[in-house]
Length: 276
Ligand SMILES: [Zn+2]
View 1 (cartoon, protein in one colour):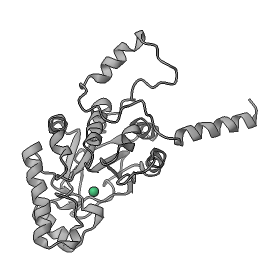
View 2 (cartoon, protein in one colour; view 1 turned 30 degrees about the vertical axis):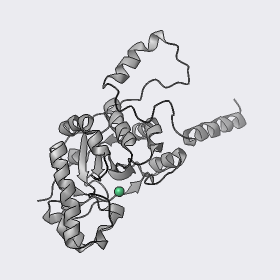
View 3 (cartoon, helix red, strand yellow; view 1 turned 90 degrees about the vertical axis):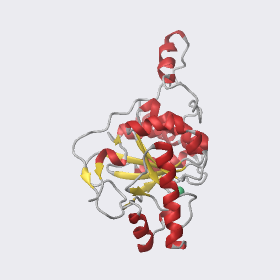
View 4 (spheres, protein in one colour; view 1 turned 180 degrees about the horizontal axis):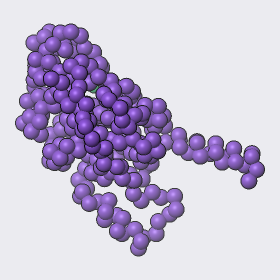
């Protein structure tokens, strides 16, 4: 192979890596059995498999373990301490199919992440039975992302309290946890009053982010993967959204980036202790 052929090949490979996401995994199979993947793998030898078809999502490693780092009583954008962990945090839940696809992603790959729940969306009730065991095992963590996503800085202290308290009650009743000490102010908007009221309700750690998959509105799959390449870095808190289906076609590519970089997906509780 001469240099020109090599460069052409290299360019094609790069283009393929950035050209979009795997459409072979349906957006939402929330009703599928947990052993769906295992069944498919067992069946593979008797069924013809095209060389370009990916039959299984590569499994992610277990979280690293080791001592946890005590959180400060202030806003965070990254995970404290040194390490090679990545905290993916998934917000809102406007689309129940996307919430379902994230739950399936967790079951299929062992992915660990945190949902920041906007509790007025019905997705969280629709998927309660599938989600609750993952919350109880600690694989998926829940945090408070208000009742219906207002800009908290525009509300009175009493209404800020109501926004956080309603979702706290919903989480406790539905999943047996309340998300404390983590809350995420919609749009990242907060001030001293918001922080004080949140702390009075147990939410002492405003959880912001280092980078975003930028999918709170509709983006292309190519752009979403570019954002993963940009922001999936050690100790990063990265924000994604369960609002639009693009991300559900990209799980293989997200896993590839995580594995290539030797990162471990973690929940916030996997690696931190609450502030004192
Ligand atoms: Zn949000």
